[in-house]
Length: 321
Image (cartoon, rainbow, N blue to C red; front, side):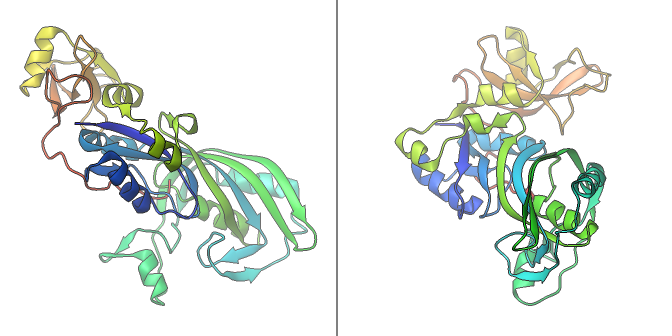
């Protein structure tokens, strides 16, 4: 059974669900999920899991993300991006470069961010964007996010339109909304702001260099083997033949070298355990003097084969970032 990750360069105008549907047809299986949504307006890295690799998606969702984007100062929209109607216009002609850099600095590091009201966050069981479309005034609670990097590469001024466009790169924690960064920067400068373009260039260890367009994938389905995917994603542990046999049957083995330190493997952040032949055997968590399996893959069938309990096809969703 074909299992692994597919790194897609999502086209503009497609939802993440659209891409999953296309991949189901290309891979010939219903067991396809994604590791974090991209808005239809956005392009770039969308990580998909096929068959048994859907078990890895939950560990990819929480990784940091990197984006390139364009922020327009001087206009606010109902969606905080270019897809929504303009709700307010204020001249940004008087905003200086230093004010822009100061505003960006205030939005760098650990911050509290209110997600966009048209996000996919559920409010009493219904998506926030659905409530907004039905005319409801949705207020979402602020949540902690981390902006690791917020670099401004270009400042372009349009005197005729009284707007300023910023070309930026943002590296951030999972759960960050780049639209909300654009909104908050504009609001802090007193002129409003929204996102006009967004491209995701990296999700955890998976980058745009590895991504393929849907057209390329239709010609050649490029699948990253599960063993290679896990090696890049999490700490590695090389097992002996004896340890491989024990773990394959769900038994405990001696804890890893990092046990008892901040780098110890945990249930939330496990280590990938490999057989002597390089096959991904299991994901392990340290528990005292032992390491216990969090997820076991079937032994003896080669890299990428096997599955843990509950292997399924449900799409794994996350916030925009």
